[in-house]
Image (cartoon, rainbow, N blue to C red):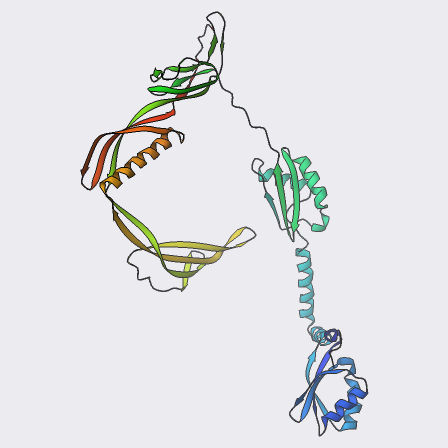
Length: 396
């Protein structure tokens, strides 16, 4: 037969039946309508399970069939409750523990703020406290998340949306700050002047009066776009704006070695694992050092955390990685090209990524001590304008 429903709650007894013909007892039990299950042969008898309330109804059937029974197990809630009643202090402690667990799960343990950049987290937490959101607050005393979101958004200036999310005993306050218009920079009237000697290749005046033309040669400090408009009788000072490009000459002394040394990982490694307790590290695995000619050791520390706090217990892994050093030799032509490319990259880094090398001229070149030495003149089309504030006289 199948196991009756709720058998654990009702209580189950596992019996061992002994006698000359235990099958007569089993047939008698079935005829009496008593539920039994897990019936199996065991030596000269049989084993079976029966409900607790049917246990005493078996005694007349045992006498009829000449069999004996022995209790081998008691399973279910009635027996657990009986054992707990015999241990009153243990049962009381268990009840107290359950009540304490329910109470602790009904408290807010942590409040976290996410999404804020301009607004300080302390200001958000102060406003949340005024709305009843703070650690050790009863969860059932808090308003609904929708209502709390509206009330908190009204207390925080510069916030377009506030979301409240509760996961267990943790509350997360999500902030979406309002987009503020970009503050306009206040500029005083100024000229745009040349920062170096150059030949003008292009000039665009967005505001102000251009005073030079294309192909004009200018010196450092010459005015390119004037911030003074009008004539001698009527003038107005403005913020000169625009872009001026020109050809500029840069001289570089380049050293390019003929040999290069590269270091790379081979993929071979040896790991060592440690248990970290406070300032002590106890090695557990990976004893010994790797048989590497050259290696580098990387350390990873993973401390245990609880509610954002780092505990003095964790795991540390050391990875010893094998290195391989490779040396390559360049031809003088390859070293020369590498040196020129490095100089062009330096020009773009110094004078702007939109700088364009128009021409280059090698003034001097020699090979000595495993290096190629060059003196190179680069002709570069780049931005040459810089600002010069207008100075007013005291009588103006």
